[in-house]
Length: 485
View 1 (tube, rainbow, N blue to C red):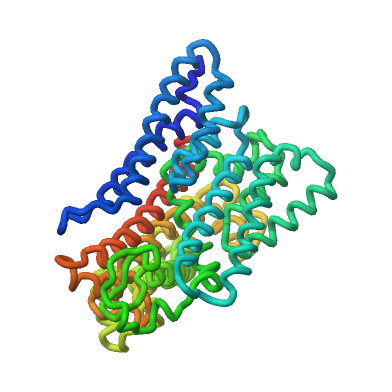
View 2: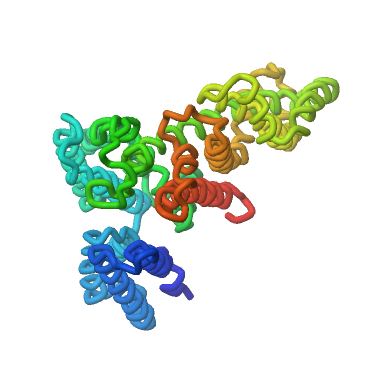
């Protein structure tokens, strides 16, 4: 017999309680200055409000579990409580709001759930960008960009609320919504693509394998939180071009040296008077770019070498793999340090160094997958009818060997981000003048006793992004593993 505890809405509600409590505790610690034992009243009030919202969510969960003994449908009073908990967005609690949106819908569909994350991403980008309102001046494009983001938020909210009606409307009207959704992808909100794709598909079609993968990822709450943070950083990296001023991140301001966190400078300023908040925002662009490019290059080259080695075998396999074994024997971080030390610290040299170190592991992964796929019946049949080896590899072998490679890529991006920050911390990564999380952390490490927040904030950003990619990688692995189907 199916229990309400097995539903996605209830699991999301329980998962959100833990994250909400953690969020309230972090705000509570941030509100207290342990060096002077003073309390920042606004942050403390925010922590209390979030704690109260968490308690109400716990009570709602108990109520839903009790009501589920009679029916598996969330009753009207529980929906009203969930609707009231949406106000937790005003306190910045996305987790409680997320579970409330799940409880408000009687029947959850894939597109609706991705639509929730789409709207939350818009709110995050607008909320973070709005902190610049406390500065005397940001940039000429700030107000127009914020208005455009607000219009996009309203449009995405309309799509979310009327999702089922849009799917069932006339093809011409539906096509118009899809075109408008496609245009909003330019802000970097990648959840828009998933919503649009779901809108074009037939819901509840179990034979659609791609749809099955999307549903399985949704059932992994940790992977979805990780994806939300990654998509938020992607969107923030794009929108910050118009809503942030790069000069605040790189220009020295000796009249604002080592200012503690304020509304004007949310993360304070460093020893050169640069806004740490702006530096972390622009640093996300560097970390994501280096991580993605340093993963894409070995993904392509390692994948090609592994496919050739696994398919042809024998002498070709020995030649390629023995060469890669030489690279594999050298620790990746040591190889990167050697290359950067020899050719100089720059973003390009760092990407090349990291890429070379990751090629052997990708080649080994692809080789193992290709050997397994090559022995399957449909490949043997393709050989028997006289298809060219190149066509067999391109049409059959590589497409059916990609799932483990994609999972590995998400995990490698996290490793590349850690390596980038580590080398930058040592002065061997991204150029010193570029706002990158490792560079920011190195500057803040000199003030751990007096201004610890200078190191805490970039450190938390690195941890959050790496964990997000790891969570997403775990979700993709579970979704693509046929043994868990």
